[in-house]
Amino acid sequence: MHLLSWINLLTLGAWRPFRDPLPVDDIWLVLLAPLIITIAVVYKTIKTDNLRNLPRESINLSFQIGLFMVAAAAVLWAVNSLV
Image (cartoon, rainbow, N blue to C red):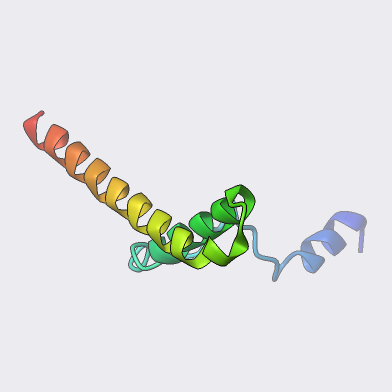
């Protein structure tokens, strides 16, 4: 066998994330909560001076991010429904 067929054989079971994304069309809204929490914890870990305040500040930022996303979705829905 030549080299190209060996490469095809080796990558036959490989997952290509950008060419074959995972089918999460039905559950993408559930995945939004871990994303928001992760962003809030990482951001507050970098920005806070005292790590004792990290849980409270992360929860606060998570709610702020979630509220902003809901508000942005409502504005976009309203603009889309007017057009």
